Amino acid sequence: MTGSELVFMCADTGAVVCVSGGDAAARVLVFLPTGETFWAGGAEVRPDAMRVSAMAALFTAPAHVVPGEPLAARQVPLSIAVALEPAAADLALAGDGPERVTVVHGTGSIAVGSVIYRVQGTGWLSTAPAGPVVQRARAVFQDRSATFAAGTAAAVMVNTEVRRVPVAQFAVRGRDRVPLHRLSCALGGRTPRLVTGEIRDTLQHVTFAEPAPDGAGWMWWSAAPFVFVRSGTTGLGLVERTTRTESPREPSAPADDLPDPY
Image (cartoon, rainbow, N blue to C red; front, side, top):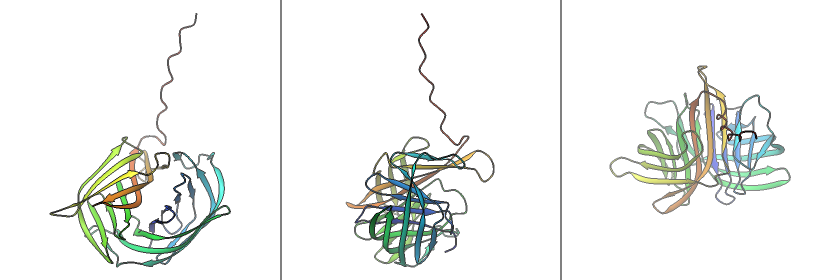
């Protein structure tokens, strides 16, 4: 796939990796269950491998990244080497849309400084959408099934078969912009299956603010790892949201009124 995006989940370590932005990725996010989040650029994603070797910013609280602005976060070496193999055939997420998705299995390692995590898991590999998608959810469950929901279209994998299903409902709870805290998604036609999710750690959330492609304002892209439940089966995944704003940052809260001088 050209211009691939990958969200990879390791059930053993609880790591969630998100690589997006094309072959020379603009965003590489690694969420660890310890509450640490790492961001770097310059990744390589192919249908058979994901590789990263860069200095990464370390976040231990919600982060807001704006291009051109300095980051106060500490920089640490980040290395990712994961071999990927397809777990199912790819399909178009929407019937006539350009975005194609497939499920991949992966094994390899994530190294942060001198700490090495051996990872083995499953992920969703997709082509980058032509335009911003308001919200997307990608999850892998303990029974090895998986779901990918975006807007009104979704893909569901059971065993090795990936099929397209409609989204009957996609509801999120949180502030108007970020972060999202809960999600409820009904997938399927006549008898939709309900998938619910909750943010794993409210302090583990990253937002990127970038100028809108049409020059009108800014686009905020946010991501956070979620814990999912479907029919009593738990899973792990990532929820993304894209919103248009007028400013790269939230307006500052007004200061409390100062008392009158004596």
